[in-house]
Length: 121
Picture 1 (cartoon, rainbow, N blue to C red):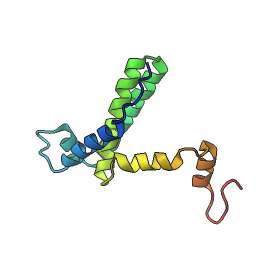
Picture 2: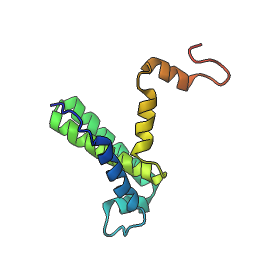
Picture 3: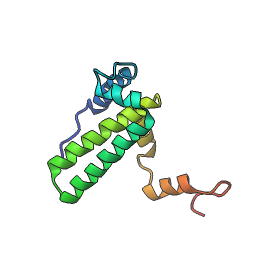
Picture 4: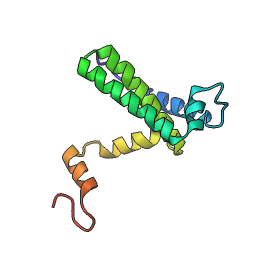
């Protein structure tokens, strides 16, 4: 079921992120995204929690179509969170690029090292 990402995947995310950001000042009566922005960060976070739970359930059930559908919902709502804080897909893609080729264990150790102590000690 794995489809190769198109060369324009990052562009698609950027376009979607820009569209979502443009809804910040929109009429909540006319836009679902504007409704979430109007309700505030807690409403956005609650929706992300719901979508994350649905993604986990789809994964447990092993239904590839449901996994893709729920992951798309989760990504969409995380894009709303990013826009809420004046961030976008490019910020996340840059962080992923920074981590590319770095061992997950080493990256995690670097994030969790106590202040004043080198990672891994």
